[in-house]
Image 1 (cartoon, rainbow, N blue to C red):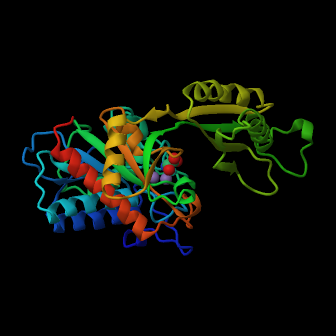
Image 2 (image 1 turned 90 degrees about the vertical axis):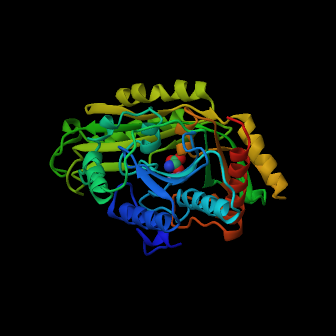
Length: 399
Ligand code: HGY
Ligand code: MN
Ligand code: MN
């Protein structure tokens, strides 16, 4: 609730977009909580934050948990924040129980998980996992023309005295707590979800170039109407991005019309494609049609199409899924295994270390909305399972 003050919207949601002043303020608040609790805080070349509880053997790779603090432009209070603060609860629970772990435990705050201001999402964790070269992000501009590199430089100025680590280091395992952002757990009346894996995602940014001209004087046959072009592309895509099992997730979330005037024929339109599927074959077959279909429907307009995120589906190691399930069982908490429709930084981390996720329900599965809501008892249950799982892994000799 305190962190929701940073970027608070009048409708009860938050607008705390990556590397914004609100994001910086929330990070400052978290760092001061962490330092008050005696933990050391580090950062890296893309602004990821690491809050470290020392282990008996500091040279061992840490067990890591965490999530993100950046939000959607009209986001909720719990997406990302729950995972970061549940991680902080883990550190404090270990302190309260005087549990000394061999391995250090670290809570991470990943930069730009959402990707709504600077595409693609998961920037911080993809860069950490060596899946994205930060140099490729620096010139990515937001809607007001501010580049990722400039915004990152502002953040680095504010946190100049945080010790900086090289980008990426060995991690023993990573477990992230997050709200489900879907309706399954609430429908099953179950507080603990153990995530089996994450479906694949492909993002495209399509720019259609026509010719801005007078809406009243130019006959149709002379027009290069970028909006009409974009519309025929989107209609054609909608015809293939549909299945009777309703597994395909196809979203046109952003459409920017320029010059965006009622009496000027649109000269350019940029729209985004968010396509997701759990089957890698479908993800590549259908995803590979996007470029062709857009080109075929460009008509008189020019087109530029960039694929900005290509993220295959992943499954988490069964020993982690079982470990979380056994821990929830031992705590007497009903739990169920389910896949994640949303992507998370755990997706990036799964490419470099054993990774798992714990979900808690949110009201009606609503997320990426000011209506996002999660109950304190479910959040506490999720934090307890996270703490017990990390304590369990930290005390065993498993990888
Ligand atoms: O878009 C996603 O899946 C994530 O919630 N940012
Ligand atoms: Mn999230
Ligand atoms: Mn999100």
